[in-house]
Length: 225
Length: 106
Image (tube, rainbow over all chains, first blue to last red; front, top):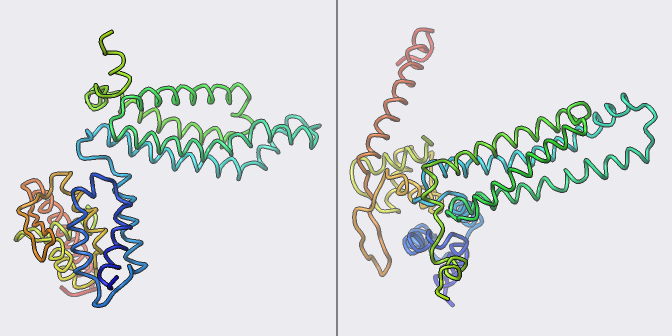
């Protein structure tokens, strides 16, 4: 394999990271420009070039497709913001653990180490484990919504409902007294997600989420018996 | 508007350009300060096409490879003009104040 073939192979491997639609539209042209900017005798893709292509691929994946209506685009951006905020919740829970303990001790001076351990296991640890998972779910929702998947709206509504339930439970367990920062962070995430829900359920978004008549579920349901 | 977007639109303001031409033109317009890489350029071109600010003018095959020429759309021209006017107004205000304060002479 000569230098050129080796370089083309390296570029193609990185271009494979881009979404299919982007590749169909731009791959051959982008490859041509990459080869035009390559140094004479260059055999391998440089680190800066590779970083640039990977960054471009990430942006292409995260960006809603062209046919996406503005309301859905805005909702997708809010979902990304929500995913970042969710990680903010994780940091808040970790950082404020000491103040939560102090607040509980102020109310219940006789709190033993075992009882505090139980509070951590039943309240704080689940939040810490859930936060990155929930952030991942919001990224998945952002992807599904930007592709107009009909089920995305249903799943989104269910998750928003679960979030409301979680907030109500936290309030009923005096989170406002013992963990006001955690509650505020959770409320901030909820507000962002409620705004995203309003946008994807708005009238201009509705045609984008029409059920796909070719989807298996609908084919089976509509098939003659 | 991000600087890279502004420079790409500026590169297409006078005439159609292909990808490699835009890279070279952006470097020239910015006095060598901004050197876009192909991955960044094509992600931006794809976005700008999606937003209706640029469009494909024509396609050619050169040395067996696709070469696509881009041009500004009417909307792209309007947005570039608005951004250029905004930057010009800001620069004029800054220079006027510096001049009043006895700073940099214009």
